[in-house]
Every structure is written in C-alpha cells, then in structure tokens.
Image (cartoon, rainbow, N blue to C red; front, side):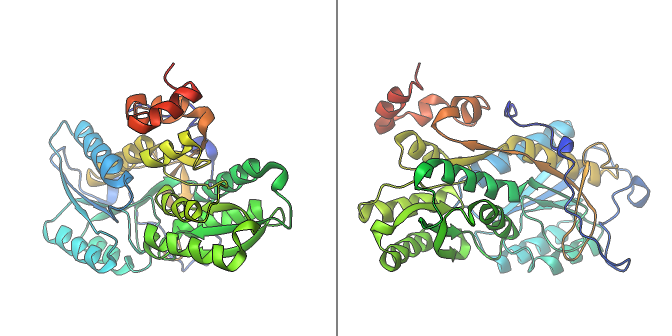
Length: 368
C-alpha cells in the first residue's frame, strides 16, 4: 500500500524519547550481526496482537505484516499468529507457545505493557529477539515501532479546539474519555491532549476506560452527562474511534450534538465524520508501521543490523536506547478523506459511501 502523501519519513523527525539514567540501566538488546548467527529466508516469525475489538488489528496490521515478511523472504518465511483478545494472561501463554514453537523473532503488541515483561525476558533468554509493536513493551526488547503518541494526543486536542471555535473558553466544559491504563500509549495520548487543552477549556470529567471497551465508554459518557449536565458540555475528547461511536450513542440519547474526537480512522469512524456525527479521527499510516515491524523482525531473525531501518532511540523503564521508528500522524476530517485513507488504499469511496452514507458523501462532493 502507498504511504500517505502527508507522512514524512519517520527518521527525519529525529525524535528521541530516551531518558537520562545511570550506567546500570539496561540497554536495548544488541541487534548486531555479531550476536546472532546469520540465517537465510527460511525463518519463523511470531506475531502477537492484543485484541480484536478494534478493527485495525485483523483488517490492517496482521495482513500487512504477513505480506511484507513474505516479500522480504521470497515467500519462504513462516508467520505464526495469535490474538490475545484483551487478555494479558492469555498473551503470556501465547508467548510460551511461540517459544515452544521455536520462532526466530517475535513481534508483540502487548495487552499490558508492564505485565508482558517477564514473557519478553523468557523469550530473549531462549535466543528470540523481540520487536515491540505499536505499544512499548517492557523488558529487553530489540526494536520498537509505533506512532508519535504524544503528537496523537496533541492532534486530537488541537482539532477539538478548532471544532469548538468561539466556544473554546476557560470556562467551557469538556469530557475526556481516555484509553486503558494498561496501555502506555493511552497515557501519552492523554498527556499530549492535556498539553493542548489545559488552560483553554475546563475538563469537567475525565475517565480512563478499562480495556478500551466501548460499553465502558458509553457508561462513562452517560455518567458525565448526569454529573455535569448536558447543557454544560461543549465537546468530548475520545481517545479512539471505537469508543467515539459508543460515546456518540450516549450523546444522541441525551439530545446532544457536539464535537467528538477519535483515532485509528476506522471505517465506521470515517463514516461518522462524513455524516458530521464525529468531528475527526487520527489517521495513522498502518502500512508504514506494519512494514517497518516486518523489516525489523526479518533483519533481527537473520542476524542483521537495524542501522538502516531505525534512526531513532526510545527508552522504557526497563531498557534504554531501543532502535525505533516513530511514524507521523494526520488529523482526518471531512476536508482530507480523499487525500488520506482513500489515496492510501485503506478504503474505497464505495466502501465509505455505501448505503445510508451516500447522501452525505454526495453533499461533501466525495463521489465527484
């Protein structure tokens, strides 16, 4: 798939999240060819994704990673896949299975970034390199790729302020419905959003949503409406599209039509943007992220250096200076649907404008 035209090279961002620390703090697991035996294309790649409630993992991430691994290995590599379905204990068992099956490298998007640490160490102790995907897993990982998650939150916050316009005053009340505390990305999204919103509007109610579950987000929105008063809420920060849909259901039930943010550019989210029910989403180039993870995994499995792939360094609480690629993000609104998800081949206009969405698409000129 083509990368978004608006996405600049991640290496050019020169982003470094590495924190200062003592010499005793762990370094990223050495990825040089001197520590790994050289292998050919006949490698085994383990892929563990965290959940299937969010559409992106099965629709985009998995097939894109599998395709790129195949391209890089002349179709000789085998990808062993499993999904944890938002269960950290299940994911730990899946890591054990990957170890038993003797994969050469493991790509893992952790359900719980801290809880996975022991599993990561167990895999590394068995000679399996680990690529942290989308979420920064704790433990001796060898590589990491994700998006600039603080920038995601800033992008959402800036979009919400733009949507509010003159209603964005210090006394204006918004509700923030964030992601799960077990996901380190959720904190970064929240921090980025607060850096933009604080002092510009008042956060009247804020929630950290267990498991990113839409049912929980719906209940939180209902509770916020009851506590703050529906006439007093001018906008909602939602950390992703799946929750945004549930939040909008609660808002509509209360007779409210106010700006709501999102993230992931899910098809349902894009369609809500078309109709005006959702103001924006954050479009992230899944092809670039997935292909980068595949490149890292294949290189590590073959005992090759990551120097030509990863230009950034990122640190967690357990490991420092991990070779990383941070992919930039784009604010997706009615104005740039064609230039992002359509241009990149994520969705076709026929998919977006199907059925009841055709009239709204016609009104926006999307079908021209």
